[in-house]
Each structure stands twice: as C-alpha cells, then as structure tokens.
Length: 292
Image (cartoon, rainbow, N blue to C red; front, side):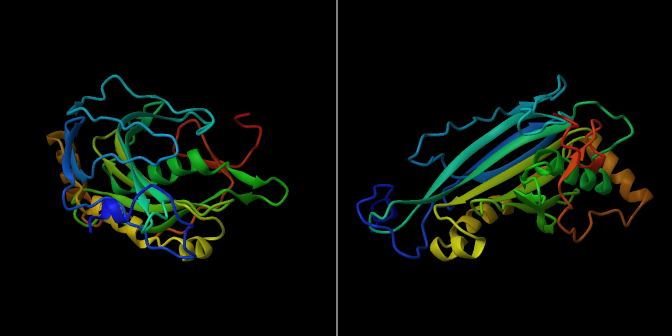
C-alpha cells in the first residue's frame, strides 16, 4: 500500500504509545544548486510538505547570490548583540506521520542562510579552519547563549554544541553539530557551517520537532527519532561544495603554510549563559544588562 494512504496527516485514531513515523521519500529528491559569492553549493531535498498546523511557506532559492551588498540584521529577539547579519537562501519543511490514520507525529525543516559579521573584519578569513570554528561557536552563542530559563539558578534553555564532527565529503573546512532545547521539549537542531568566501559562511540548520513532550529519552520513546535523522543525514550526505577560484586560492595557501590546519575533532558544550561582543567573535561573561 502506498505510504501516503497508510501514513496520512488525517487523524482518525488515537496515537499509539510508541511510533516510528514515515516522512518524505528521499529517492526522488531533486538537486538544488546555488552560487554564493562565487562558490557553488548543491544538495538534494524533497518537495515542501509543511505540517498541518499552519502552513509555513518555503523560501525559493535563486541561482546566484553575489552577497556584495551585505545581509540584513537578525531579529533582536533572536540575537541581542546584532553582531551578525544574514541572507536567507532556502527553507523547506517535511511532515512525519504515524500509520493507519494516527496522524501527524512531527516535522523536520531545512533552512539555509549565509552569515557575515555586521562589522566587517579584514583580518579574519573564514576559510581558515580555526576562524570557521570560532565563528560557528560565537554565532551559536550569539543566538542561544543568553536563553536562561531559571534566572536564580542559571538553568539554560539550550545546550550546544553536541555531536561535533566534520562533513566528510566536503574537502574544504566544515563543521557540524547539534544544539538541543532543554526546556519544555527536547527539540533538536542540526547545524552545518561551510565557508564560501573570506567573509561569508553558509549555515544549514535542520530543526526537528517530535510530537511528544518530556526529556530526550521520553520523547524518543514515544516518537522514534530514526526517520527524522535519516532524512537529515541523507540531505547532509548530498551536499557538494566547489569553492570559487579566490576561495580555493585562499584554502590552498592556508594548507601550504600550515599542512595541519583543520577543524578540531571534538568540542565540548559551551559554558552558558554568555554574551557575544559586538565584534561577533569574542564570547563574553554573561551580563543581563549588556544588550537590554
């Protein structure tokens, strides 16, 4: 029987105590290619299939972004320091459903943006692995490092990075890791940072919501995380990067001068709460009044 019949968003039966939902098929996923500051990035993604609870529109990707005019400010509520700006490139979302009309069981989305410092720094080259690593950790902190749940005990709303590694098939520097919401749900976000020029970084964000509540263990027991992870892994595994001649020359020069230059193999979760300075790269001791 076809999955779209057996695994439908229509809910006519009570959900089971545990479920392994089904999402979009990846075999028929189309290839999407974009040129970002001269660097080509391609990946595969299924067709947009948003959740039934308020459709989220997709962002349709152009073929080429020069990025010469700069990005736009990130919402102050997300990033109080306003130290990074971004250009939105792509967004799609996919629903996962339980069998035999038990309905919607969660969603995964893919968001691609290009980030750059609000205050340009000619001394920083994000093609260098250590600069990329610093940028990834600082950007994560700028967005999530101030999210304190309990002001008295310092309990954080997010934790990250988790499961730190590189993207194996990409020859230029890359880093990938997870962040997790620890308050009220266990929503997982998978991040990938890929430099596309000296001053621009492509940031993939995969956000997964399982339709369950509790701790990570409790959520995974109710809704199997494996199908969500499989989709994310398939998309990540399809990413290809061809650096622009300028970016490739930078990378070749870095390797020539420092053959051991590479992103760290491991990285422990950051100690939050913390702020990021206006330079976008310096992580500071948390001050609730700094960007109030």
